[in-house]
Image (cartoon, rainbow, N blue to C red; front, side):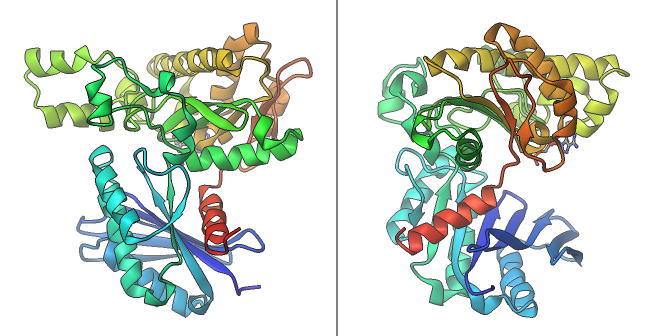
Length: 401
Ligand code: AMP
């Protein structure tokens, strides 16, 4: 059945992910990725009916060109165009304004623009995406929805979102913890609540979204009560190329003593740190997993990742107060890295969390399931599906569900 399709758009700083979702069947019909914008050559790859296709652009492209290609070429060629009923946009930062997904209006556009100071690489590009879609698909006015990465974390209490800075930095400038990956957390807890047969509004879990960007969230009674990412997605866990938690004084040392420029320091912390920085080789956990026992550099770097992750899980366990229904692993690493899951869980015995090595080895590559021993708190691996969550929100909002 093709008559209810949602287009989901995720504009990154130099890339664009898209999917077409049949909302009634909860099925992704077409998905793709365009990358390397503003470089000499760029390419777009897409998958329709399990057939992979690719087009190379031999001139510089941008988000507008790609959106036009997706809608006027791909959707028309594949006879999907007339069935698009709405568009859902992933928006990285909603500031304090958005606690839910919303229909995009002029006011919403302004608020997304205002939140750009906290996500300068993403929000402005995502605004361009929305405005271009308004131009290409004017008949879908009022049917475009913004879904914010930060919205899920707006339930975090003040004691967890305030930094211990002079209070005016929060009151006047709204500097606080906002978190990220909210759409992924909402998706996985919905699945977890079904698997565990615990209603969403009583579900207590600690959810680890481990991918190129990694974060962890304490979820009590179905609501986020603390999360590791902060004002921006730089804080918290060790990531692919981002440093996560560091002593802020390191920045003054780099600036004052090492004479690095502020934009160089930003680049080091965001693009050259994390697993890439520690290994000096790669941020790819497939390589890391294959070489953990062979290369001491890789082992040492991975041990830093595991140490930080297990420390966060342990500290978030005290926020659950009564019971932990599950520890959840998701994201490219959480879904697939048997090694990271095993080594992290092995550090949590004191919390009554034990891994079953056989199950852990089996649950990967898109499988959902438990990886704990019988006497342990449940540990679930759940492949995330942010696109489906965005499409569901979009459909629910435009049909007033
Ligand atoms: P994401 O950002 O969620 O797409 O996750 C990307 C990360 O997942 C990268 O570090 C990948 O190396 C890692 N990843 C993907 N597949 C595997 C796998 N089979 N084993 C280990 N890590 C993986």
